[in-house]
Image (cartoon, rainbow, N blue to C red; front, side, top):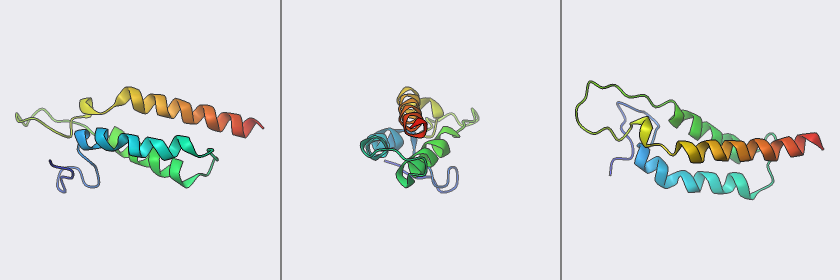
Length: 93
């Protein structure tokens, strides 16, 4: 399976590969107590942000593994909401 396409999407996983790796990104972000400057949370959010910027052009008729519609949007939003809830509790103490 194509994980990276150096010319089209440098540094990004294909959407199916990102879906497969998403639990690996999510787990460390929720296991440890989240601090506002936590490196794992920052890296995870950067990876999610990079993949959320995926765009598609309709000029290519063959299936596109980098189509943003294949990303786990609901799970990404739920994770962000959980992180906001965890950091809000820490900051309010």
